[in-house]
Amino acid sequence: MNSLIDIMQLTTEEIDSLIDTANDIIAKPEKYAQACRGKKLATLFFEPSTRTRLSFEAAMYELGGNVLGFSEAQSSSASKGESVSDTARTVSCYADIIAMRHPKEGAPLVASMRATVPVINAGDGGHNHPTQTLADLLTIQREKGRLSGMTVGLCGDLKFGRTVHSLIAAMSRYQDVRFVLISPEELTVPDYVKTEILEPKGIDYQEVRDLEAALPELDILYMTRVQRERFFNEADYVRLKDTYILTPDKLDGAKQDLCIMHPLPRVNEISVAVDDDPRACYFKQVLNGKYIRMSLILKLLEVHVS
Image (tube, rainbow, N blue to C red; front, side, top):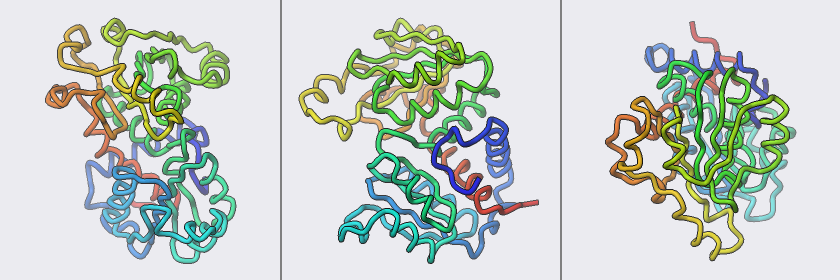
């Protein structure tokens, strides 16, 4: 594997190996502190980001490497009309690995075809966000001890939510996983997710509108925000943005070992009063994102730590 553009490039064995390395990093951070000494990560973020960009940067620094890059398109030659291909080829001259976020679907794939170093897709429009999915999988494995045999509820914007599409694709390859898809009618999961991922594998899923009614059966609840930046019509965004708000009283009927997740940023779809509930795992997700990105950087750079 030279670059990571789509989570489905990874076999379940490769995912399990990345998770194993991340867990080893968590247990023995000092062992990895100089693993990438002399290596440079370029973060090319053509779209705003807090967690993903800082997580990549923290990951490289904790591996003993260095970071260069930009955090918005206006800070790069893209503002002068430079193509993604030329940017990737140019930056390959300065860095050993690239993490790219771009608002256009497919841009990191184009970059990976022209770059001479590994490229990691750090999010491309509503399409893919494979390292968020790896962070999600690490969180589930650490909280539940497994990635199979569970009921996963995904709630909110299932139409534009790239994290949702990637997580369904990844978890559909593990045994005995069923999905409860909770959304307003306007934001249901795209047909291709059902016809290309769920139905061919005979995976059990149901589409529902009522979050509270679905909660008691869930092992995982994955909340998402309604994303203003994916809407063409402000009125539609305003009408749908507060459809689901998770509050402590709604959790009364939920399992005691429920794992509540969210890719963040949160707007108001999870009340801050839920943050102190031991079932809230979304800030653990953030931390796990750093560790799994450390694991991925090591794999792509073919750095072996003994």
